[in-house]
Amino acid sequence: MRRYGNFATAEDAVQQALVAAATQWPEQGLPDDPKAWLITVASRRLTDLLRSEQARQRREDTVARWTLPDQWLAPAADRPVSASDDTLIVLLTCCHPSLSTASQIALTLRAVGGLTTAEIARAFLVPEATMTRRITRAKQTIKASGLPFAMPPGDELADRLAAVLHVLYLVFNEGYATTSGPDLQRADLSTEAIRLTRMVHGLVPDDPEVAGLLALMLLVDARRAARTGPDGALVPMAEQDRSRWDAALIEEGVALVTGALPTGPTGPYQLQAAIAALHDEAPDAGATDWPQIEALYELLLRLGDNPVVRLNHAVAVAMARGPDVGLGLLRELEADGRLADDHRLHAVRAHLLEMTGDREAARAAYGAAADRTASLPQQRYLRARAARLAG
Image (cartoon, rainbow, N blue to C red):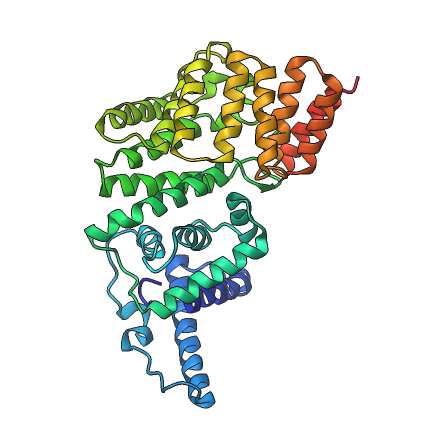
């Protein structure tokens, strides 16, 4: 995309190069430099696609004659390559000024994060068909704008930063808690999100929200090894072996958020990092400072009416002041409707009902939660909790 400037056609060319690799490499062997092979083949495919499009437009004669820019037809080897990380450049350029923030985030999740349209739709809490249309329109808007794919100048970087951070946050979340499939987490996604966030932090080291997001990722990722048992089963935080948490990541994350909080306006990533730090610094689950976590979630709610934040706030309230109070907040959230089909709402209700001693209602809620998640480890965990209450 950076070299040739045509988003949709570049995507098609890369897909064709991957198909060629899948069919040729098993027979011919792995190239010495697989990445260079893919780029070269994709570049040739892209040139063919662009020439074909040019010929089609001439034949149809419905628009004025289109002449391809010379740089689009130049072989990849003849184009200068920036020393900067291509993924970061694409990440920043996908947050295109001609797009709405929501479209910027959706398109970047698709192009950079590698998430499927269904995964992105779940992250936005919208139907998959709606997200498909949004991504398609975003590509068309970029093509029609004529603006180049390039590292934005400093004054534009600040305008795109909010969308970039939101993208990285959602990519990390999908890696930390995969929404579908056989695995609980995808370390490749969370690791890539951390790598890119470190690079953004290097670009704007004094931005407290960038530091807050990096801190949040490190503090959450520090628990990765303890989140699954030997058989891959989900282990909830209260039951995790905290000696398996990564102390170095926790130390780095705490230092980042501690340094960021006093430096400017406190944003949502800093607040979430502070909450994660409270969890990580507690020696055991019983020592968690739930009243302070409740207060931090209340500050988050002042920044925006996010239903997931309201759900987490209800959990914190339940742990600090009792499950009945938390269930009251859940009833208000259920009336909102935005999380009606989200398994997390039903799982939280099940947990709080179990805390009150209402085993039958808790068992039904665990079953409802299991029916609403496409993650197999979460399904197994929720059904196991329901089965434990059946006796």
